[in-house]
Image (cartoon, each protein chain N blue to C red):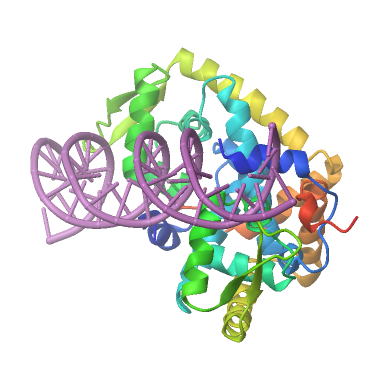
Length: 165
Length: 165
DNA sequence: TATTGTTATACTCTATAACTATA
DNA sequence: TATAGTTATAGAGTATAACAATA
């Protein structure tokens, strides 16, 4: 874990001075908030022995066995070789299994095990707790608004493999 | 640049299926949107030969010469050793200079040169263009709302060195 | 005794290219 | 001829520890 993270928590102030112009940019706020959230998520999930990216993969695979490893790569912004490594590890821990896809024997069907589903449920609970803490300054309505706005920003930017149409 | 990025743009769909549960989480939306924005920012700034982190440092230093390198580390979520490398590079290109701080001779005063100010102005324009494109799906009011919400989330999480009180 | 900046170094993560098997 | 997954390897990025100068 980065040394910057823990130090930051201790020296946290209230609101930045006007001179720090980046803080006025929605883009930088998005970047900075995501960095903080990523750190907290990684720390919190470490308590149950799961990396954030592993949680992402488990969660995506839980949606159905139809996502190829390359789909996961595009969806989760992970290099294809990183996906291999993550799935190797998840398979080693018996959270999921690779089966051949009969429809296209180059691809794998990724299927969760019961242990995988249990781990995912645990991680999902942690994720909710992290969000509750991280977005704690916002009311429930405001959190919905934030989610809608970010959803709109992301609209049209998801890979085709997970889209309805 | 990640291969996932360019591929993603080409295969972009509209809105994720319900089965991709992560897409319903404000936390994951924040994470994913920031990844995309970071990629686009890096690509766009590369056109003028500047890294995103270099832009961040230039912008923070422009606010005043009172931020130490460790302040920058905490503020920008960069390891202290990374800050040294970034400033080395910016100094080599004569965008800024290190002066001894007479008040505390362990610290440096980081001062922008005219060339640094010019580069910053260029980068700032690029940044505005990136934001205009990235948040293009939102109205001006909605963009303000997003900025306010993220600002509230970040409130109390900035390092003391850039805070007013 | 603690802190700032620095260096050297180890480590992790990511990207590149090549290969196998399938289509 | 192209694609999915894999491997090996190179390269970039990050963290760790130690040091000099200063407080």
